[in-house]
Amino acid sequence: MMSFEQWLAFAAASAVLLAIPGPTILLVISYALGHGRRAAGATVGGVALGDFTAMTASMLGLGALLATSATLFTALKWIGAAYLIWLGVKLWRAPVRVGADAGAVPQERPVRIFLHAYIVTALNPKSIIFFVAFLPQFLNTAQPMLPQMIVFEATFLVLAILNVGFYALMAGMARNSIRKPGVQRVVNRVGGSLMIGAGAMAAGWKRASA
Image (cartoon, rainbow, N blue to C red; front, top):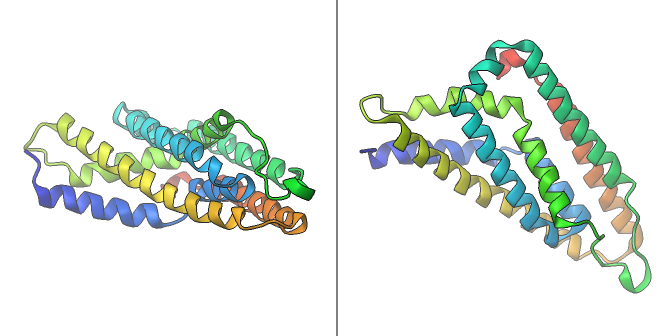
C-alpha cells in the first residue's frame, strides 16, 4: 500500500513542475487571449488527454525509445514545433470583430481547439522522456508497480487540469474585458507571438537535457 508521505512527495514535486510555464501553458494562454473563456474547456481537455497520452506512452516504453533514438526524438520535436508556429501565425492573422461584435469571441469550433491542444501536448517528446525519469523516483519497488503508477498518473492529471485551468481562466478574463478592436488586434498578436515563441522553444530542445 502506498504511503501518504510517498504520494504527498510526488504531488508536491508535480505541482512545482507544472507551475513553471512551458509551451503547453503558452498555448493555453494564447488561445484564451485569442478566443476568450469559451476556449478554456477545450484547451484544458486537450491538455489533459495529451498528458494522459504522454504518461501512458512512457509507461509502455516509448519514453525509453525516445531517450535512445535521436532520430525519433528530433522528428517529433520538429513536428510539434512547426505545428505550434503554424498555430501562432494563424492567431496573429486572425480577424478582429468591430462594432457591436467587437467583444465577441472569434468563432472556432471547440473540437478544433481541443485537438490543437491535444496534439501539441501529446507530441512533446521531452514530456514523454520526462515521465520516464520522473516517476521511478517515487515508486516503491517493494510494492506492486501498476497501482502506484495509476495513482501517480491520476494525481498528475488532476494537478495539470487545475494548473492549465487557472492560466486559461485568468487569460480568458483579460480577453473578455477588452472591447476595442485595436486592442483586440494587439492581444491576438501577443497571443500569436507567444505561440510562435513556444514553437521556437520546442525546436531548441536537446535530447541530452531531457
